[in-house]
Amino acid sequence: MRLLHTSDWHLGRSFHGVGMLDAQRAFIEQLVAVVREEAVDVVLIAGDVYDRALPGVDVVRLLDDALVGLTGAGAQVVLTSGNHDSAIRLGFASRLLERGGVHLRTRLAELDQPVLFPLGGRADDGDAPLLAIYGIPWLEPRLVAEQLGVDTASHFEVTRAATARIRADLAVRAGTRTVHSVVLAHTFASGGISSDSERDLSIGGVGAVPLDLFDGFGYTALGHLHDRQELSPSVRYSGSPLAYSFSEAQHKKGGWLLDVGPDGIGGIREVLWQAPRTLAVLRGKLEDLLSADAFAWAEGAYCQITLTDAQRPAQAMEKLRSRFPDTLVLGFDPEGAGATAKTSYSSKLAEAADDLSVCCGFLEHVRGRAADDHEAAALAEALEAVRLEGMSL
Image 1 (cartoon, helix red, strand yellow):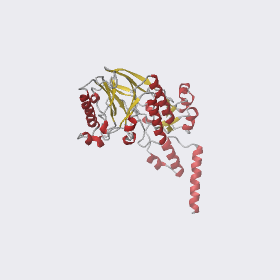
Image 2 (tube, helix red, strand yellow):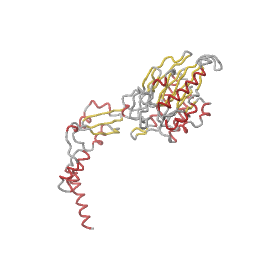
Image 3 (cartoon, helix red, strand yellow):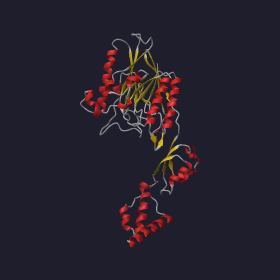
Image 4 (cartoon, helix red, strand yellow):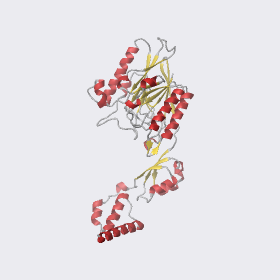
């Protein structure tokens, strides 16, 4: 059998105000094409299918199209819920969907109920080795600790209890035949590298769980972190298929293809997704960014730009967008600012000679650049209008 591990689709998410539904549809088309070309038997989706608990109608329709496309390409799907999903909504009609090859594991009671596939021999061959795929949905410690029989509501304790249930089920099944296991889990496992677009899985404490909780499983398909990474040969994150923050600009987006035979997990290799847009993280002075040939590659990219000019340039965003039209984030970090002692605004206010000085001082304080002659004249005109209005009352 061949499996494909993916996760963190975040359908419905935007990127700094830019809708991503078309990009997500393009990813799904790539995914379905790979399933056909690689003859994938099972697609594993390790949580955060949706970006919100209440996805829009067009977002739900996109997931529907994805599941129809994957099953139409010959694959079955095993899907768990993540911390962004509503487990109840995502798990709707799970028993009916299972008849069509879509296996949802969104309920706590189902985490030790695997999806079973024969490995070699006929489906009704009672002696053929089995592949057992388990799905651990996102476990909110405060909500599931009591149901899992643990006294401490922590990510470690609830995950340990969940994996113990899976091991108990495996032990029973292994008593009669060979069983190889794959476990899906949406969690922050120690050793992973996080990025800005994942939510913190802990509240008031460390939420990471140790890797040894997954010892003994043939493969653990993790979701939550957006960088595709190998924590151990048998424990991996697929990462998100698209970049959802500029901190992911250097990620190589993709997933993992696994071959499983009667002897267990065989080869594991990467599959890469083509990014719809390049991400550029640029830094420098405005004049250099607008003129240097070294930045030409970023003209068609989504850009995050930090200006280092000593004073904040006027109309900086408008000027940058003349060369980089898709500048989405603009920041300022003046060179040498940290070494210069800054006079407090209250001190400047005390030194102001008149109302115009107060207004011009405030403008300089908030943007780091003094008012020019045109701006000072506009402020003076506004102040005079206020003075005349007050005299007429």
